[in-house]
Image 1 (cartoon, rainbow, N blue to C red):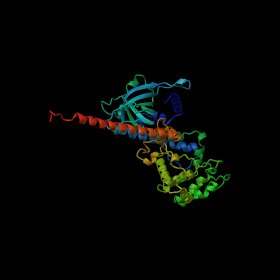
Image 2 (cartoon, rainbow, N blue to C red; image 1 turned 180 degrees about the vertical axis):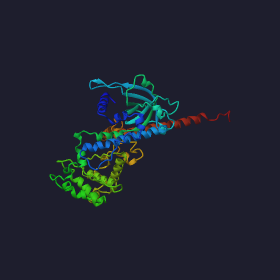
Image 3 (cartoon, rainbow, N blue to C red; image 1 turned 90 degrees about the horizontal axis):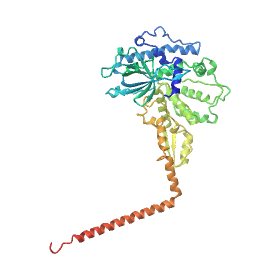
Image 4 (cartoon, rainbow, N blue to C red; image 1 turned 30 degrees about the vertical axis):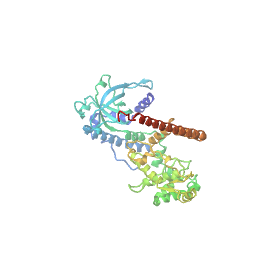
Length: 455
């Protein structure tokens, strides 16, 4: 992390971040199950404002975070640990003054013999520092008091991390810490915290979702009611081909009607109990938008959700493969079935649908299980960049291959003559070699002629 990024983090901490609230807790507070008992209230069904709605969830989020920390402290014997090799302090000036010495670079070394216990640092990790050496025994709760937490905000390989400490430490004190114990990762909780503390300027979308203003859900009469005009029949065919029920079809049509509206922001909600086809409905909607050549960004709160949507969308995109000896035959099939299909012919055919190349999945590779899913590997952003990088290499990429083909086509006659000459040279060399072998065998026979004395 560079100086500018650290300054931003400093300014953000002044506005009370989630980690700043964690820093205010002592070890006794974290172990106290009644710490937020008086602040936890039943969430009402109605709210007078967006601020009231947001602040209502803050105590619950803090209690959930405290509970996760409490559980991690109760299972310290199973927590991943690392040996601390060095701690270097960073002093950054911001807002006209020097920051408190809370930012440090830490070098780590793996200690555990079991691979499952090796600590692999990630951004958002909370670690506890202990002066106890790992050669003695694993840290216990008492060994972490007074508590010093570290928030990992940058990772450099497997052995170096940048950490924001929960309190200031002296120059001599930083050399006493020998062990780092992983507790929890607060990336998800931090995102929720930031969403609950958004400024009023960013609350337009939130107000639409909460439907504070009833007019936000009303239909825009300035726009046409038809779905993409001339494409309406094709859209209906696409939706019906997915075999959805009437409510699912109505939900998709409602989304598509507001797609081109520029007069107001619209929010549509797809809801229902588990197993009612919400993922299928969203995937069908995305497939329809792809066929309409509409760029769409899909976000989800968890990796599991986004993987489920991506997998369902890919299954729709690869549902049918049509092959035919002529383009006219394929065109006839396309005219009847223009949904969720990849078409292959003997020559280039103008496609009316997007292919898999227009689906890009981005996220955490490990948590999304990308490595074990070959289908998702085809659309995962990092893998696609890696493959394209190899194709654009100057030594063996597309450019080099195209230059080779162009050179061959432009100098075909010359290269053919050169090839014939090379073949002729090889033939002459081979004949000369055979001739030398025959002469060598003849000389050998002459040398081996028996003499009169030997007879």
